[in-house]
Amino acid sequence: MTTLIVGGGWSGLAAAVTLIQQGHSVHLIESAKQLGGRARNVLWRGQTIDNGQHLMIGAYDRMLAMMTLIGVDPADAFHRFPMDITIHDTHYSPLNLSANSFLPWPLSLAWNLIRSAGLKGFYSVAKLQSSIPALLLQEDITVSEWLLSTGQSERLVKQLWEPLCLATLNTPIDHASAHVMATVLQDSLGKGQAAADALIPRVPLSDVLPHVAANYIQQHGGLISLKTRAKQLIIEQNKVTGIICQDGATLSADNIIIASGPSQSGDLLAEHIKTSKPGEYPICTIYLQYPPNTRLAKPMLGVSGTSSQWVFDRSEQIPGLMAVVISAPGEHEVMSNDTLIEHICDELKGIFPELSETVSDSLVIREKRATFACTVGIEKYRPESQTNIKGLWLAGDYVANGYPATLEGAIRNGENCAKSLLNQD
Ligand SMILES: Cc1cc2nc3c(=O)[nH]c(=O)nc-3n(C[C@H](O)[C@H](O)[C@H](O)COP(=O)(O)OP(=O)(O)OC[C@H]3O[C@@H](n4cnc5c(N)ncnc54)[C@H](O)[C@@H]3O)c2cc1C
Image (cartoon, rainbow, N blue to C red):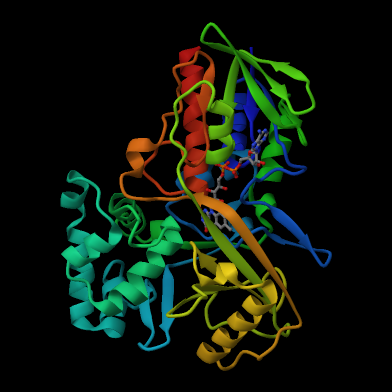
């Protein structure tokens, strides 16, 4: 019995690995010429970089387990360090959310917060954290409404919560789901120090998982076809029997897992299943090549009150290379690449005077449909992996799991979908 998987992003690959591991026969098709989907390699000046800067955390346990299973040592793939977030602002002094202290976790976090935001700031954060259980029992509200109801100061909203919401939900706070944000905070801050560790890839993204997963799948007898686009599902008497590809070829299968992105899956399913396509938001990554000896004070730094939101020092891969991330929609979208680069260089120079004014090279990558919009009530609209059509299954980061669009969510949904399919057989 063969399962056809549509989409070679991290979710489709996780589904394929899980099925193969149980001795199931798998054929994965991917429309692009490479695997990895929204977390993949890009060639630039003969060097390999990422299509967008990604940050993983210690709480990504299913991702770490999947990597270990297929033979990637997370210690080789990531620079892992205790949570150490400093957010610089154009008006306020830097704010620290950091585990670096002589005190044990979580006192370390409290200590650094008190030092940078005062006792009042600390109490506000504690109040928000303690409101989570009640929040999750009521109807979802926006993150802005939640922040207001717990009396967060203008400074904390601007310099802490807004940057964290954009980084984790990629959705502006006036629209973002407080339930999803609360779940993320619970998982990252409420489960011990290791869960909050930051993991920055030290190898290109496709080498963190997709390439190795592909080897694993093929070595265990699975088939992978690149440049193969599913165009139409074949469904007879409420049972899926195959797909028609863009080139007209028909592929038959007993089970099909659709693991493409939310809008692509919506297009494939539209004729057969009533789905509500979520909105999607962009993420822009600007690579700036500074002189090779340039280093940031920390591997990643937050900035608020600017178009730039986070700056990552990618020197471990390419000395002097910085990746600046701008999540969600904003004024940067209407700027040309040249204007944007100049604007970002000026901003960074203003905040980090030690940086040189100009860069020797730069690249802007705009991922227009980076993540689904994590808006209020989103959980009600996310589909389950099992559909009403026999043999038709859904994976991908947007399938229901309570989390925003993340690599951990993508892997979790791929694995869970494969396990449900196996249990049903
Ligand atoms: C710039 C950027 C930054 C991000 N930052 C982070 C971060 O810091 N941390 C984090 O955890 N997550 C981050 N994410 C989100 C994360 O990358 C995604 O949640 C994850 O990659 C989604 O994986 P997926 O397999 O569900 O979907 P996708 O990666 O979209 O994979 C779907 C695949 O299906 C293929 N496909 C589509 N239609 C068809 C078809 N008809 N036939 C065949 N194949 C098809 C596509 O080409 C694609 O390869 C970021 C995303 C972006 C773009």
